[in-house]
Amino acid sequence: MNDLQWPELVIFGALFLLVTVLGFVASRWKAGSTLDHLDEWGLGGRKFGSWITWFLIGGDLYTAYTFVAVPALLFSAGATGFFALPYTIIAYPIVFLPLLRLWSVSRARGYVTPADFVKGRYGSPVLATLVAITGIVATMPYIALQLVGLESVLRTMGFNASGFLGHLPLLIAFIILAVYTYQSGLRAPALIAFVKDLLIYVVILVAVIYLPIKLGGWGEIFSAAEEKFAASEATSDGVLLNPNNQLQYATLALGSALALFLYPHSVTGVLASRGRNVLKRNMSALPAYSLLLGLLALLGFIAIAAGIVPLTNEATGRPDTNTIIPRLFDGEFPAWFAGIAFAAIGIGALVPAAIMSIAAANLWTRNIYKEFIKRDASHAQEAKQAKLASLVVKFGAVGFILFIDPQFSIDLQLIGGVIILQTLPAVAIALYTRWLHRWGLIAGWVAGMAWGMLLLYDIPNPATGKAHFGGSALALDKLNLFGWQPFAGSTVQIYVGIVALAANLIVAVVVSAIARRLKVFNGTDITNPEDYHVDEGDKNLRPVAAPH
Image (cartoon, rainbow, N blue to C red):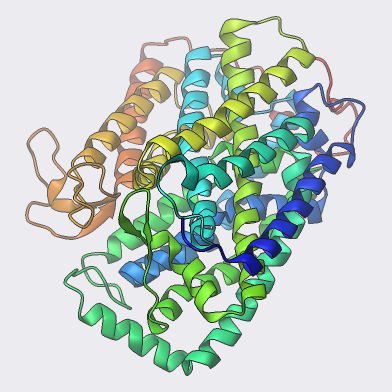
């Protein structure tokens, strides 16, 4: 183990202790009559106002891995890393109206998960289960990636040993997270999100003002980046996009925007809000985080100008690009401020990891456990099951880091976006129409998932030596439709998620048209048109924590 950075560790530990106390105190914060109900434990009583929702959703979407990976991607590949900026800008206008409808119907019917809505809309346990499993599978590597961000900080502070000893601080941190999430539910990350966002804003604003002054200005920084990429053998690297990756950049931004609020943890943050006006204000204000993200991304170029090299991960024996930003802070800031920066990244891992584990636990409890294992489960039994499931999910994510090369979990996240996009027809489109038949949606899901996985399997990554699942950028030349190559010879790249979603929609439309022609039963819709417009304060609105 390397020499420990004691000043940084002390400050990191003090701030971590603060959020731990907040996590336990949160069980009494805005508490209802009981936490033995998913409305209370899993959705915070469905009563978060504008400020709490803003911090909760922001803390949910802008994760520790975002703070580590986006600038690291700019450091390694240049302009391609900026895709995160347009996608977080266009996401909110795209999802504005669908999220209002989802909140209303969920509030009216007591839905806790997207799969609850799908079952109510189509009366299909099969389709609802597919949506639930998809959400859980897409969320697991996302939680693991929060550990990657946290561990990059711990390794930079000196916990860079091989084997179990190198992972011990990470394991301790997640045991503490697991305990206070088990006790407090969604209220814990909601309260901690205030501290996390405050620290992140302070660190980034100081970094983008102080570091450029120290390094000679932005002109010097961009010149250093341009010089590095000019010497690179990779044709996709550069401070500007090139003809081959422009389509991939645009489709990745669009696909990521469409996927953002399909993730279960995003929906959980939305359903926890008090009313439609709260969501309207938040969808208008959340792009402020995009300003933060743009400034954050530029740290990748600053790291180039500062001559930062990644730390060698003693567990793998390879340089770890996830340590670029922690190494930058460690080398350029005083130790006391580096400790604050490391705490910001570490706490930035805890908030989304907690929300993601709760969202996955809600899916398991409502759409698998209650559907197939114990149909007559009481509210208290549901809450108990969700608490236990949240523990399993967290430590399953820790298993990714302990037993699998962290690079593999990063590759899984590239797959996660492709996976969750396949729920768009069943969740987002169904909020407006039932024209798509339930068997068409199932067939579309199978087609999109199968083709997406096949395309991802055939993508290599020469830089890491991986022959398969090496990324999500597909050369158009590789598109093969039963032997027909419509773009043979093209080196232009496209995001696999958009291709798979297109296949999903085409199959869903064709099968739906056939099913309608044959008058195949399309399930029973138990929702009413007025359910999609209810708001807080409406007469006869279903009480929070009401019986099923």
